[in-house]
Length: 311
Image 1 (tube, rainbow, N blue to C red):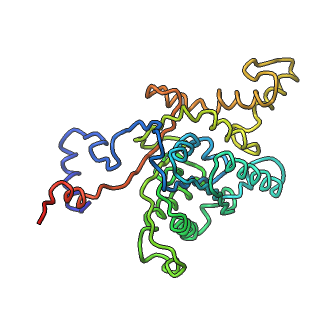
Image 2: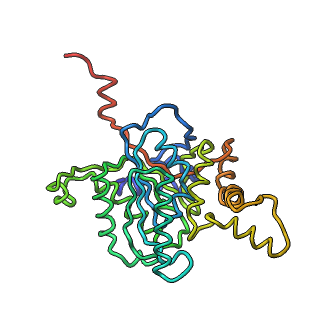
Image 3: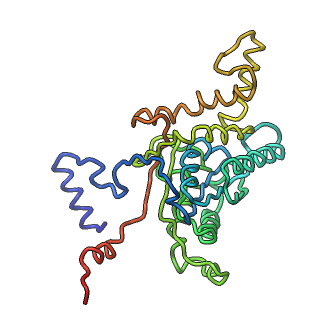
């Protein structure tokens, strides 16, 4: 946007009623994305990037399953070692979260998972250029087409691990497609490869223009959330609640008569409440919502297809 255009818009806005945000939105109208038959994403690569082992399972597991079921090859990238998340001393916490991360990756069925091993809650003190460079390397190495991660423009995010990861992912998606940054990558046989499709989620307010119907993957999402035993709202919290109520001489029918049922029903009722609420808004049973950024249209190629004639 040029300075002259910006000033003219500002002056016009001061003299007229405010225009809706959508009038300036480059990321398109809200779209409901549903299950597609066949393998329309065959040959594509999707990377789900999370600061902690429970982020993708909570906010985007259904969508990750959907994209892989459509034929994409999946990779899971965890940025921190989760040393502040879970019971016990640091070494115990790190090892239990590592176990959870590998269990989560197995349930997802990804080709490989990567742990970048930064310390929890201190990512606002790292060199962002370093993390960005690691993402660029992975995007080029794996030839990533699509990323799922935190929204770099999400509001009210207080966790530095979340907003630093988000900012570095967004910058890396763009820079990975250039031919000047990190030329040593090209000497190693890699090629420029920008990421053109992004599903960004947020814990709080964000611009939502993509809602994914995740109803067909509800049971799988419960499976993957059940593996986060060291931290998060899922894991074995159902069994713990069932045991606590038993000590108090109480019983909650929702939790059933064994720990497995307790854990799964607890996740379904409480952890997935947001998915039900989102789905209800759009006439779906379960849904996840995103700030979606897709490939920009190639206007030159579109013009050629419409108007080119034989010589």
